[in-house]
Length: 268
Ligand SMILES: [Zn+2]
Ligand SMILES: [Zn+2]
Image (cartoon, rainbow, N blue to C red; front, side, top):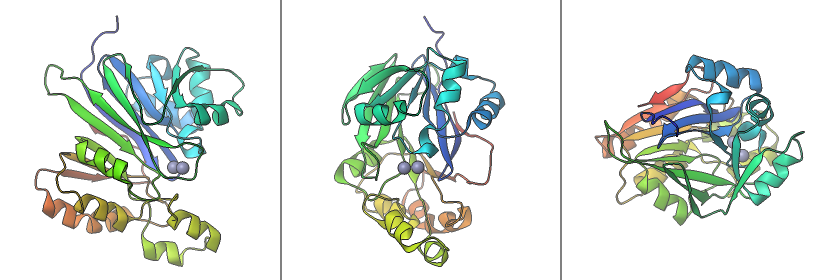
């Protein structure tokens, strides 16, 4: 039996250059996405006083490299690691792996158990094979009540399902990818700009704000804005755009994850 751990949620990073977090709850230590190269992942894990061998599982949202490039390195260090993904995502990632991990295939839209965690795979509109976000129900432990952690990056737009899950999150990681003007002024080719703005691309700062302000009721006490574009966004801009969200919800703590920073962001 694993030793029960206190609740901890560490974001190793979230930006268009890499996404990864670690959740310790319900007697499990799981990684959400593994989107940094091996050496960077190792360094971040060391900073947190842990290592790949101490992970029980990794959950993958979709096959884009900023969500799974570190998987091969993790598997070298921890061949027994359980890798959760849906069929399409597993299939695409397997092509680039030399080993066959212990795939734990789930259905998009379903809820499954892993140790004390109930994990829901939320369908999201994005240009990957079958992309998902995750809502993870963590049981009550000594010092706190049950909490739901929700990881939603890479969204072209907010569907009704996404809004439903945003409203139910206690700790919410939400994409705030780009500033419209910075994207306009960037040297990116027009077709890439269109892809980013498309219904299966990414959420802009204003779209993330409007999603939150449009909810009748929501319960989050921690809002973490992530998946910022290094080239087309700034934390100061996101901060300013989210002023209305802060004003609308007094008990909310808002953190913007800086794509240029390597230090993990932790919620206890
Ligand atoms: Zn993606
Ligand atoms: Zn991404």
